Image (cartoon, rainbow over all chains, first blue to last red; front, side, top):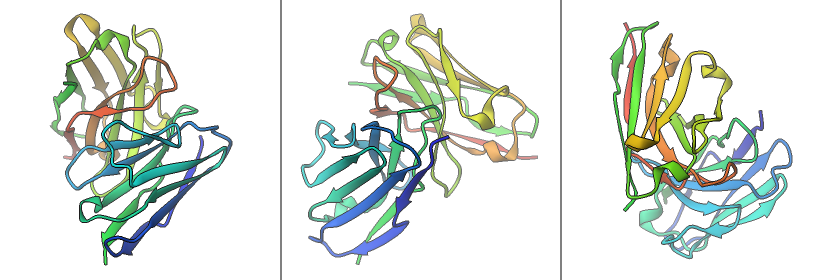
Length: 107
Length: 120
């Protein structure tokens, strides 16, 4: 199975800060990577697909980059409504593994 | 509007069985791969299984192989997960998700989930 190593596991930042989360795959997954946002008690919401494509309706402060094994997710200016847990997921191979998640809080 | 609604969760004893259903609407169900993803209480997301548009192919995470079966009824716009030989570690919220028309596409719509609790 492909292991997805996501870091950090949690972070605290101020409103307006730039926030960066990284995800490393245990083998080359090309650009078959998603980023999801999950708020407490809710289903995950797709933000970024194919590593860098913004899902329709998602604010432009969210972005993704990378290919191969190393990926980055960025919130350019953190907003109060961005408080959530963020997950990367590879969909190159079965099983479609997730990173362990990054909990984002407001400082 | 795309809608996915899971049902069938509940409390079941270890070794028991349960069938989850997912009712789909707002899109051409028979054109999309579908998945089940679960989340144990307080834990991260775990992909469980997916199924091809016509049901001819399905894939599973190792921990459920031989115990769980994913299937679909395109005439009823419904996805199912038959879960047998349930274990305490299967306790989770189970989400139904719509993938793309091709194998390597993202799950971009999710249902609200249904809770399965395996306990005596």
